[in-house]
Length: 197
Length: 197
DNA sequence: CCCAGGAGTGGAACGTGTTCCTATTATGGC
DNA sequence: GCCATAATAGGAACACGTTCCACTCCTGGG
Image 1 (tube, helix red, strand yellow):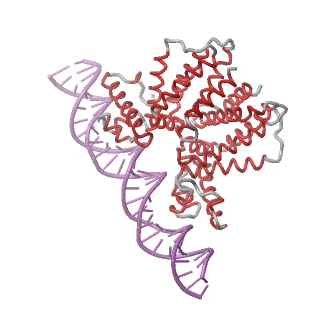
Image 2 (image 1 turned 60 degrees about the vertical axis):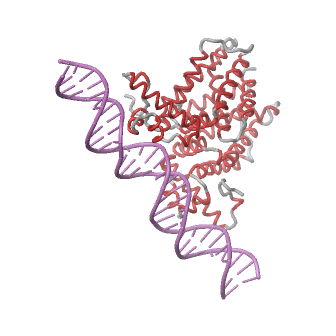
Image 3 (image 1 turned 135 degrees about the vertical axis):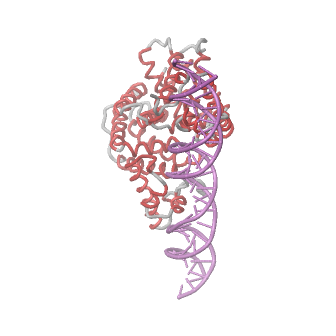
């Protein structure tokens, strides 16, 4: 099993192993926060996590696996955090925009980190499919939760998918300096207005 | 000028230079068609284009610049080809889907090439902004042309933007083996139906 | 308690993108 | 035709992701 996938928490037996995994992900996030994608160098991650290079590769088969796993971990935290409180907003569109605006602001606060995680996500190839699916699952969960109660739930999944796509594409635009943060929100607002009138 | 951008045709004086540029782009596309992103190795491109490595880097500052420029060239050809004939279809939605279906089929026929170009496009950082903008411009041009005559032209640009985003995100999904080619079209169909009812 | 086997360490080595340097060749103005 | 200058060739060198050892350490079953 898990021939090409990263080791997940479920795969890890001992507390020491969970701790190692956490340290590696934390190290990756710290380095990314400071210097972006290029600063996340595998040797540096290993040193900072106090782990051998071979061990890092045993847990995460590539730099991309590592970063996408870090993204999944961040989304997981966000999803858990928001699980119990209702999203504010009168209409489904308002609630979705509230959610997106919150995440967009959070990512603006950590531009380097966002650049690293977004680029890793976008560059990932087929071997990272399971990690990517996890990220998609978390994102869709958060969006459909915000949309719930619109009346036409049947389209919710499709709409959430489109919104997620537009959001990712906008983030890529922001990361590459083509669009400003306000543009991201404007674009999302336009898309949401079209999709959830 | 063009400190970090690729050399465009406009920058090139002599026919010999235009020819070199063409050869390099062709070599990149051929290698990508055969082995995808990883097979586009700068040394191999230089050899196949019969050009020194330094020359390749003078024309294209990085592998990503090279591949995104190749993508722009492909889109350019497509845009020129479709410029004079009307897109078939009764409604704006039908015409957009006709266009997308055509491109999607074309990309399916060259999966390795599509993988290489799509991943390069998505991995690009800020230094590739101008090349990326060119690709976006061409794509938006083709889409708005297909949509023209819908009645609500004012939203056309925003809608074209959303459609382009969804298409790119879907392509990424296809390239990474997460979604099938039919899924791409299904997703596009869903998005277009939501946006151009 | 002991041992077999898995997990982790430390570091060398390799491949490919990128940079850099020198010698050679085109090119355009006189 | 000749020179100054830019462009190209050829290739060494470097950086970082990745692989691969040989060795040590830990852990759980007997």
